[in-house]
Image 1 (cartoon, helix red, strand yellow):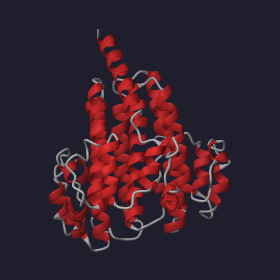
Image 2 (cartoon, helix red, strand yellow; image 1 turned 180 degrees about the horizontal axis):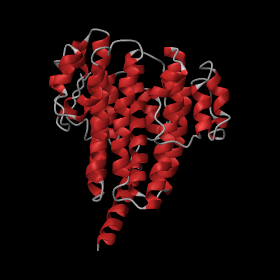
Image 3 (cartoon, one colour; image 1 turned 60 degrees about the vertical axis):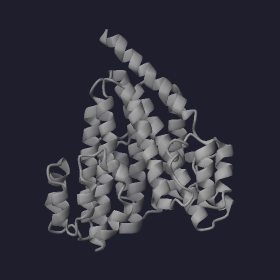
Image 4 (cartoon, one colour; image 1 turned 30 degrees about the vertical axis):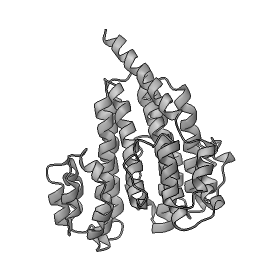
Length: 351
């Protein structure tokens, strides 16, 4: 009986995720959105012509860009919650993964503001919706005016133990990278526990296929940014990169970490297991190339994967990519950019 229930929940997730993906923005929707001349016009289109209608139902025409972004992120989390309810074997813990991921994002945002001496600005970007879904009190986090205040806000959470060792030198060069690496490692360990619970060996292979790919793409971008923006040496990069989920060989990781210059990443990638993936993408901006590759991979796998968790991860990435596109459009409208310039920033807008 348990096998039957699991099969039923798997099939329900597959059907629901694909149905939700089927309501994604079309090329025509994107064409209409990039041609909007005001945020009010964009809001009206989202409310009347797209699957975002319910999320924006109560929004008024004078809504600001920050509020639009908040509602978009709420939309994705709500969709995550819906899918997780279908997966009875691991759904609750998988949904918790998305909450933990946001917790870490909020903690890092506050640490960045503490480093530049402007912690009061966190309140301007505090996501009220998430405060109802996390064990953290984000308002207490927003009230922190020092690293000690941050630690008090994290009291009783697993995050305090992770960041506390950095209290004395959190604002020194390279320390933020170490804090981020430790928090992200905790997130990946949490995810590993979720994956290993309630999934068959075949299912775990499909899940790892998705996660390894996403992690490797993130690793490529992170190494590139660390070298280009932080002038990081190999030791600093090693401290940041986590190879728990990867398709890279140890030789390939070592080669990328030791890239002499950021621009050398372009040629080095062609010597890795992802040489074919990068053969047909524009290398003008590495970050955009990676986002495009992930979009291609996940939009393909959501149709063919048979494991519910793997399909859920594909859907969440694609939903977040769509939200990122809308945010680009919002910013483009705010700054008066022409439609063709906005369109060039979008990934997967020609579906």
